[in-house]
Length: 136
Image (tube, rainbow, N blue to C red; front, side, top):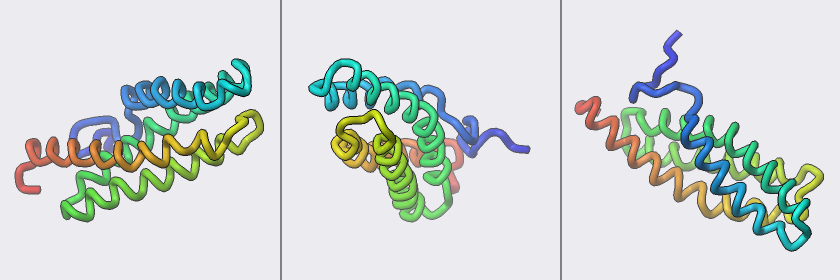
């Protein structure tokens, strides 16, 4: 079984991006929900951080894997669209579970940042792939 993708990374999970995303989005969600009390802010932030670590690490790697398919336009489009839909849907679901005072508002950062982040990530990984595999 092949455990590395075309760029030589773990095929299923990106640990660094999972941790970075968890810290960043967990902090944003804390402040969105802080006016409902520190405990509610921490509940929402904890859910976001745990979710982002687990799902974000997987989805970031999914974006990278899609970005390395042969057709450049399809690669970039799908590497943004598919992970964004998954991230936005799952984020809203997580915040709809009891404990987040503002589930829709807590999803807004993902709606805004996910497509932009995935576009940047896909473009970077596409460039990296071209350096490693010049024929693509």
